[in-house]
Length: 410
Image (cartoon, rainbow, N blue to C red; front, side):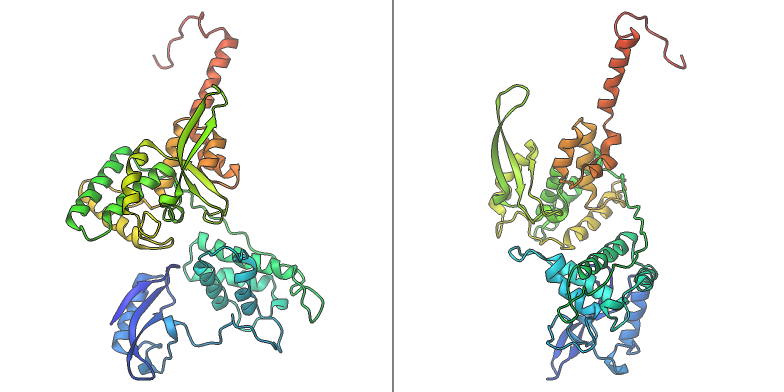
C-alpha cells in the first residue's frame, strides 16, 4: 500500500505500511516534500519500485508520520551549551506567543505545522542571537521556490516575525540581555487574493438540487448535513471553522428597544463565544426565517453538542464540494471557481447590496477593523450614494418643479 495523500498545508505524502522492530507492519507517513501533483506521483512510482531515497531498500529511515528522526525540540533541556537556537525558540513560542491563553483549549495543529516548515527552511543550528536580514530573505526565497502561495508565505513570515519580536522583549537570564537585540528587516509580501465571486440565486438552487440528489443516492453519507452547512454559511456569513462549532447551545433569544420607534424587539441569534472566532472576540449573528425553520431539525440530529459531524479544519466539506462541482457542471453550470469561503462573501455581498450600513455589516461579519469591511464592500453600497441626487436636485430646483430633461442619447 502506498496511497498518495496531502497534509493540511498542501504537502503530499505516502500512506504506507512498514515493518517495525517486532516485524509487524505499522502504518507510516512518508513526506514527499512537494505540492506538485505530478512530482508526487513520480515519487510514488519510485517508492513502489523501491528506488525512492526514503525507501528502506535504499537505506531510508522513516520516523512516525514520515518525519526524519531527530531530537524533539519541544523537550526542555537543562543545559544548552551553544545558546538558544531558533528552532528551540520557535517550538517554545507555541505556548508563549501563539497559544498564550492557558485556560483556553485551542487547536494548535496549524501553529505546529508553521514551526516545522520554518525549521526545515532555516539553517540547522542557527542561533537566535545571530538571526539577520539575510536569513529572513533566504527563507522567503526558499518558500517561493517550493511553491507556497503568497498568502501562505505571508502567514509563515508573520509567524516568524512574531516569534522574533517576542525574543527582543524576553531577557536571557544567563546574559541579562534580550535573546535578540533587534528584529531584522523583513521583505514586503503583497497578497492579492481578493475574490469577487458570488453565488447567484440560480446557482444556489442548482447546488441544492444536486445535493438533494446525492442525499437520495448516498443515504449513508453526510450529504444532508452538508446541505444544512451550505444554508448556514449563506445565511450567516460565518467562516467555515466558526460554523462547524455551532450547535443547540449556540442559540440565544434577545430583547432590545428599537432606537427609532422605542418599541421592544425580540429576535433569535447564533452566538460564538470568546476564543472561538478568528479574532478571538465573541460574535452574534441574527437568524433568518429560513434557518429558524431548520433549527428544530438540526437540534434533533445534533451529536456531541454540534450540528455538523466535522471538526474545524476538516477537509471533508471541501471534498463534498468537489463532487457537487462535477454534478453542477453536468447540469450546464460552472462553479469551478467557487470555494467554501464564497458563501461568506455571497452573504456579505447580499447584505451590502440590500442597504445594510457599514458598521452593521462589520459587526455581522466579525471584522476586527472597519477598514477591512469598507475595503471589500463599500463599493457595493450604492443606495446611500444615490440618495445624494435628491439633495442636489433640491438645490438645483429640479426636484419637483423643473421640466423633465431628455435622457442622454435620446
